[in-house]
Image: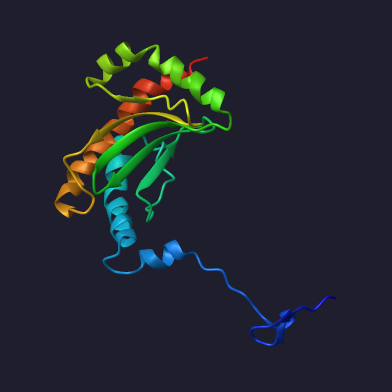
Length: 179
């Protein structure tokens, strides 16, 4: 057995125990912190989002987090529907981030070839980001008239994310999962 001397404490390493802490959990517990506010938003919003889906919907295994985003999955590796909540608004994205950049661009190109049909079905123009300089691509919609920092906006944000995550799943996903 090799024993290393830890100079700072003048102890050999066999007598030391190190604990790793997840700082995001610690920060989320601090009342009034941004992380705690995010966790409270997702605790509020997730039941609304889940109710818009079926019982086994894309968010059924998702729990509140201290991040400003949550992902819903539908069984296609590297592709998710992401809900984002921050001080600048609420957003829903179809996020394409497979391992290979070319796969993401191929999926994006399939979707953009149906852009007119997709936007007619959603009833709104979407934000289309092929992002040729990056591995990922995404299609999104944003409500900039709300803020996660204003609790009075949470019902509007949650309803927006519930409605649009369902629309994205129902309208966009079939174009890339059809065999």
